Image 1: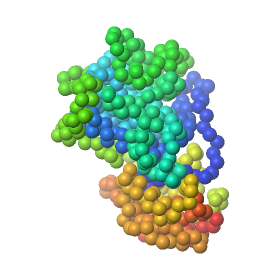
Image 2: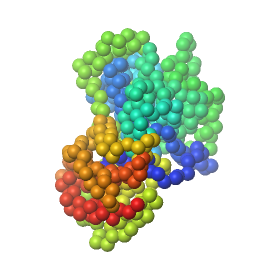
Image 3: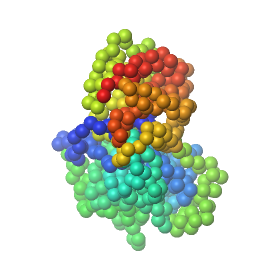
Image 4: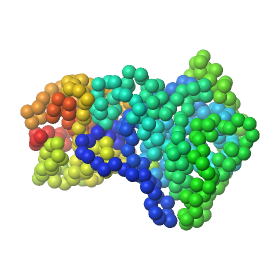
Length: 486
């Protein structure tokens, strides 16, 4: 199952909170981003909803434009530096706006203005802008402001908060998360502390991608030297104070490298971008009121893929799997997970979450890829603020997964009994992280089982395998369910 799906359900094991700290080493390392009040699934869902609205409110270049193709290639190079456990499914888009601006939404959607491409002196400076914006996503800055929002759905942490909307809807949630819709379109408001952290992490991304991290400071100098009103980016990204000096101090002791500064691809794209029809912020705001951009984007073929099919990931392609290496062994062993005990094949180890709000997996080692679990079981516990029926819990979970991640239910919720407790079973379908033998994508079966432990606590198990192989694993999955003890 894709890691973006059901993977960050709120596990009730107490984990130590992450602490912001930089390694005291000459070699730059990525900091632990810590934990946000909003689950990763909910961040991604909100980011995708907001990105879809950008396509309604702003002129976006189609995927096949030279600018979009170039920005995505550059973005892929930057994303590849981020450790997979901290990465996001970044996807990149270009807005036909003259103003110098760029913004990245929670969960990874990122937009770069044409004006930013033409304003950058070289590829390193443009990469610096993108790395800075990606760092806000990495550090989950918007989501860390989400604690101001009050959930009114009656379910506090079902599946790590993947329930879709509060009574205010997505705009209200985004506004509470520091994302505002205004006259200039979509804007993110960050604190000076956020900016300092994004500068520091952005410098690490640049360095590891082969660019001089000083380029980020150079771009800020270029912007601040401009006369008249400052670019929108500077308004949304307040200077944390001595920005250039802080970046220079941060990178002072890093081992020097042979840095890349410019490329022929940047020069060609920048030259082409200068001839692209672009609009001012005022023109874009006026056009949004009449629906001009939604119609123009549709006409030009600029259609947002809500499931992130064009997402750029740091993860390498996964080869076709050897089913033999996935098969469960004959011997079953018991594991005590705290809230419950469960038996599982001895050759399927238990992997506990390394960070709060992640899931527990029981799977063959070869069944886990950077893209997700393709064979095995995902376990978690959902809590509710007040008693809620198992039917409602199951329906909410399935509905949200279907709406935000493309997991398709292929059966109705059916009764199931687990250790004397009445629960619900739903068969779902998605795309496996493992391709078929011919290298083409294949369908995956995801068997969701939810059952209550108490009036406000629900266990969630998801058994996964490619659809064509699921029958071979089903007897083991059923035996694991029969073994559950509270």
